[in-house]
Image 1: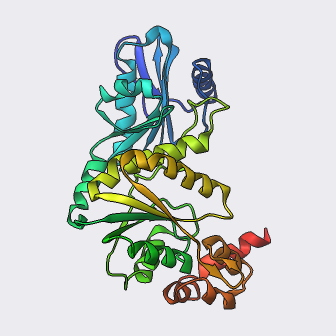
Image 2: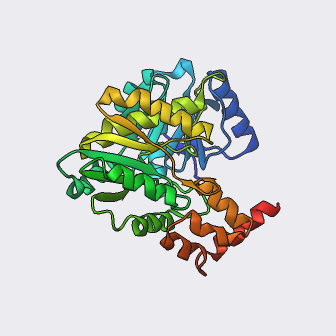
Image 3: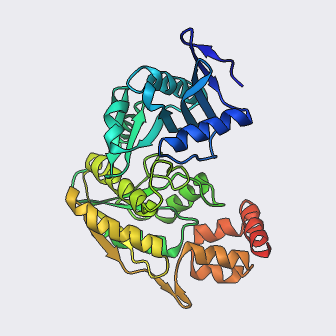
Amino acid sequence: MLPPVLKEKSIVISELTSGSDIAAAKDLIERNGLCFEAGYDELFGIHELGELVAVGARSGSILKMLVVEPSHQGGPLLGELVTTLLGRGLDAGFESLFIYTKPEYAQTFESLNFTLLASQGKVALLEYGKGLKTWLAGQRSLIRPGLNGAVVMNCNPFTNGHRYLAESAARQVDNLYLFVVREDRSLFPFDVRFRLVQEGVRDIGNVILLDTSRYIVSGATFPTYFLKKDDPVARIQMELDVTLFASRIAPFFGITRRFVGTEPNCQLTDSYNATMKRLLPVYGIELIEIERKQAASGVISASRVRELIARNELSQLADYVPASTLAYLLSEAGEPIRNQLQLNLRR
């Protein structure tokens, strides 16, 4: 726990760790029309003459639940709170920090040196630091002239379906940027997923492989504390994600086509495809859907591969994955993942 910081004689900033302080923070947040989210790394508050008048939290690189009592708004408290949370995030090793807020508050955070990355209508995403600018600058050598397309993949793990999508898309453009989502939400770590994709598309000469860094909106970090209960959270997240890609990433690489596979099984992915179909043309990007590749027993998908592993039906994997993925799945390095999938099925 950090010692209290005396800003003025009557103002104290401190980390809130006791049950009573957390309860007071929850009350302040909810009285101001927001929801309290328990998942955070640090929670800080500002007391004036012993009364909690401002609160904010940090969860990884995300600042959230920033609230200042209405009677104290317009003064320095928000800036003091944000400065404290930013300092803690930078000390924790994050080069950039982010905040999701209502669009009408975006200008307030821009005055605190945040940069607006994307706005959806109900949600604005801002970044403190030069993360996106630095990340894009680091990819400058990958810029290619011509007709450029993009595919964004998770690849948990890389399958023949992913390979078919990449091949089909690559035939329709001069250069295909294949983005592998960095966020780890699977038993397959990013470095493994990236390597399997790299090996799986190595022979497709016009594919340019790179990762999404932190600039694909994460379902794990997307906060909902400022949304109303009836707001369609998934749709809002999808729209923000598509807007960020279309307005910031695609123009840098000259991308004018984005390719996806048709989605007969997952309603969420199908909704995401529909969101792209609606929003991408606004930014001059065409969405092209490619019919999913089929195996003898049905559509090829990463979820089907994980299911086969979980059921220890490893002999069927060759119908679903390239040789390089199969070699990893059957290897000693892949054994912990096999064991965990099989354990999860037994639970």
